[in-house]
Image (cartoon, rainbow, N blue to C red; front, side, top):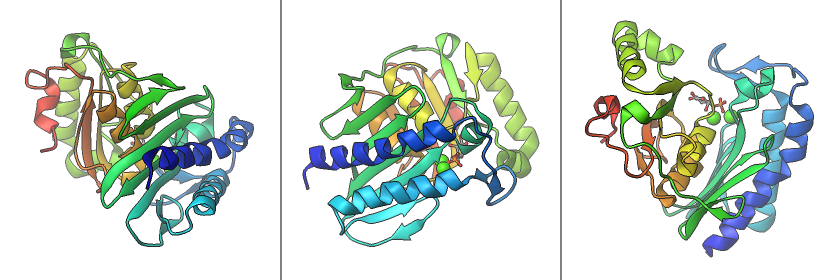
Length: 257
Ligand code: IPD
Ligand code: CA
Ligand code: CA
C-alpha cells in the first residue's frame, strides 16, 4: 500500500466534509450528549463520519475503520481512525477551534494522517515521508523551557476532577506557575497539529482515544517534535516541539512511559 495514495485518500475524505461543516458552523445546531453532558454530539458529527467512510471505502473497500460515531467496522491490515469533528463543543457553540482528523495505520504502524481545520482551511498532513501544512514542510520547533512555552491542555477534565480533585488542581497549579501561558482551546487533534507546526510548544491530554490523536501524533513526530504515549490505544499523551527540555519541565511528572 503506497503511503502517498493513503494520504491522498485521507485528505480527500477530510476535505469532503469541509463545505458542510462551514455551512453548519455558528448555526447553533441541536446538541445531544453521549457519555455525559460534557460529551456533546450533533447531526453533523454523524453525517460527516458517513461521508468520510464513503470516500475511504470508495477507494479501498477492504478498509477497517474505527470511527468515533460509527464504531469499528471491517478488519484487516489497513485501519483508518476517523474523528469527523474533533472539538464538537467548540463547533456546536461557535468557537473556531475544531477539525476533522483522519489517519491510516498498516499492521499497527501509523503511515498517513490529516488534520483539517475547515474554518481557517488549514490542512495539516503527514506520512512516513514527511509533514506539511498546506503543502509547505512543517517543522516542530519552538521554546526549550517552560518559562518561554505555551502549553495547550484540557487538563484537568471533569473526569480528572472526579478521580482526584485535589491532586489534579495542585498539578494544574504547577503548570500555571511554570509555563509562560497555559490555554484550553479544546480539540486534541488541532492542538497536536499546532505543536507540529511550532504554533504552540506543548500539548497534554488524558484518556484520549485513537481517533483524537492518531493523525496528530504522526504530524508531531514527522515534523521533528516528540509525541509520548501510544496513539493507537486509549490513554494519556504528551507532545512537545523538538528541542524542548522535558527533564526540567513541570510536565516531566506526567510524561507517559
Ligand atoms: C474531545 C476533544 C477534547 C478532549 C476530549 C476529546 P470530541 O473530542 O478533543 O479537547 O479533551 O478528550 O474527547 O468529543 O470533541 O471529538
Ligand atoms: Ca475527538
Ligand atoms: Ca468527535
